[in-house]
Amino acid sequence: MHDLSFISPELMPWFMLLIAGFGIFIWRILGVTLSSKINKDGLFAKWINAVAFAMTTGLMVRIIFFPTGALAQTNMLERLIPFVVGVIVFLCFPKKPIIGLLIGVSAFSTTILYNQYF
Amino acid sequence: MKKKYNPFKKGILTGFGFPGIGMSAAMFGFGVFAGEAGLDLYLCIGSLIILWSMPGMVIFVSLYTAGTPIFLLFTTVLLANMRQFFLVLSGMTLMNIHSHKIPFISKLFWAHLISPTGWAELIKIKNEFQEKDLLSFFRGLSLALITINTFTTIIGFKLYDILPTDIVSIPVFIMPLYITILMLRAVELYYRIAVVSGGIIGPILYPYIGDWSIIIGGLVGGTLGLLINHLIQKGKSDA
Figure 1: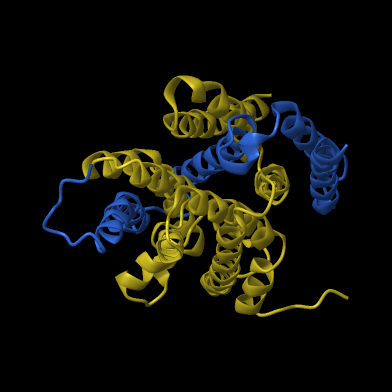
Figure 2: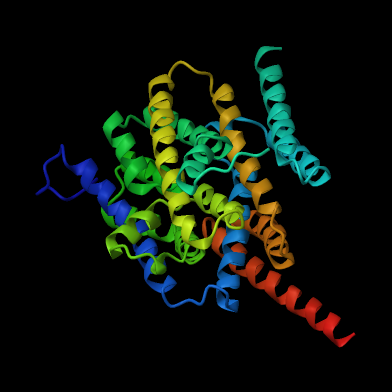
């Protein structure tokens, strides 16, 4: 258990939260500080953006393959097929991204509701 | 004819549109998760505002309720959130934050509010506004996102024992699909290569190295994108 007995029990959750917050804030402080040293049109800025693109996509695809919370209660194929369908529809109609999103979400909703009630 | 909004208003409208719906759906799921874990409502909202990072929030709730020692909590959150560094670095550079005459603490405040959703919207909008207006857009966007996410987190928290989990998963599904589509809209070839390789490498490595997979996938994917683009450009100029 938590061994910080000098902090009152009511404040302990908030203390833990602030410590967790500091764990994230370190990266943000570092990001702001270093951003002043970067030429925004340079190769390094392009690389940072490319890394952020790759990381964000990796994170989103990971949510589909290895979800937590409510999504984890669904089957892999229930998530994966509507996701792929949404992406393919977007690639067919790249100028109207909303179509891919709506079809993907509709496919997922239909599958979930069908399994829930039929 | 398409109506032209000022950047701040456009940010608010964007935040209350699909990006906000997608992100707040995930926060709705977080509210359910926090309620199930036995957090009180204030701590649940506090973790949303103070952490503003879904992995950080989920880790905090999981480890705190398990009674994890404070050093382990700090280290886990720290290591799982390295991606924030790249998002903030990229977002701050996009907005050219240091050209604005605002105190460092304000810059930190806006950096705190950069999430994958906020960053993705900045990328999407960057060619619609002048660079100096992007901060104003981001302010409006953040205001809307904080409002809608706080609201849906509270709703999720209050409804956690009423709604079937399967139904809760429907709004949560919106965010990954929406942001993946946003990423695929990138025009530049090196970003497209980065998106595809990051989307493949990260999840493949995840069972072996956990949250580090996203960082490794991002670094490899981003580097691969620039490298392949460089080789293609070189091949064209040689031809």
